[in-house]
Image (cartoon, rainbow over all chains, first blue to last red; front, side, top):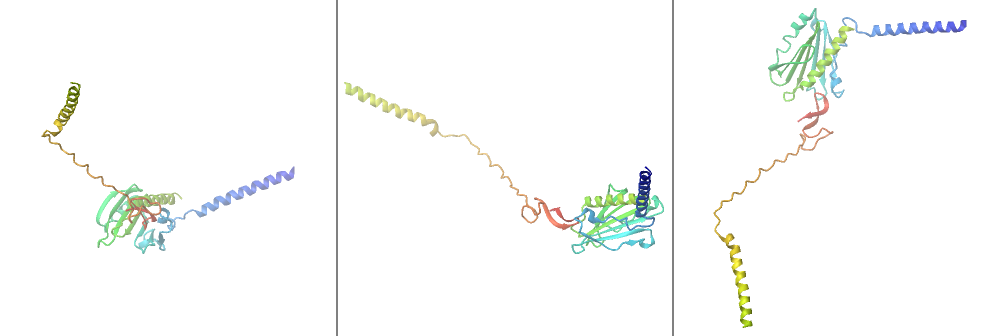
Amino acid sequence: MLTSARIVKTACAFAIVAVAATIGGFGSAAAQPGDYSTLPVDPNLITDSLAYTAAPLDINPGGQPGVTAEYTHREGGTREITTTILILADAEAATASVAGAAAEVANAQTQPAAVGIGGTMVSGTSPDGTQSVTVLTFTQGNAATTIEFDGPPNDPVPADMVIELGQKQDTAIKDWQQA
Amino acid sequence: MRRFATALAVAALMTGSVVTAQSATAAQTAHDTTVYTVPAPAPAQQKVQALDCHGTTGAMGCGPGWFWRDGWRGWACYPC
């Protein structure tokens, strides 16, 4: 009888240790404050999974907390997606940050986008007309996000792809903020 | 007398046929002033055979009106 009680106690002890280790493990895997490397969403998630190659992340671009990620299409680099996420002091600062993000788009056509807060999509061309340019901007709390799509002048990015990538990016930011 | 009657009957039959035939065609041979309008032929229906951008019926199952290429979403079907 004593032996059975010991076995039960030992099993309980192992179970407690296992649960504690699991919880501790999850805790350490969560994003650390100031770790922006997990923020950008790879566009290959919504493509054939091999279309884009990511450049090394630019952490804290221009000294501003956040991250910039550049993804280049394998087809001769004719298409490029650049995601910039800046973490600012508050939501107002984030909104102000994205206000002029699409200022350099020529022949700009602006339309609202169902992405994050204040999602806006500006489509047009580069100032010299050699590229199609689409800029999606939105905020989520104190995070200001700009996703720019540069491509051939006769092949602008499809709007549904802009929205889909933007929504996935918005979800990733919210998950990161709640972690 | 009998011969005369037979000949008369035959003559009457022949005459009757001829007269009847003339009257049957009278309406047809009269000058018809009715202006008939021939209905214009229906406009030829343009037969559209949907093809993909290469003039075939579609590659990789894209179907007509779509084009298989390496675009923004990688290799996929894109509208022409």
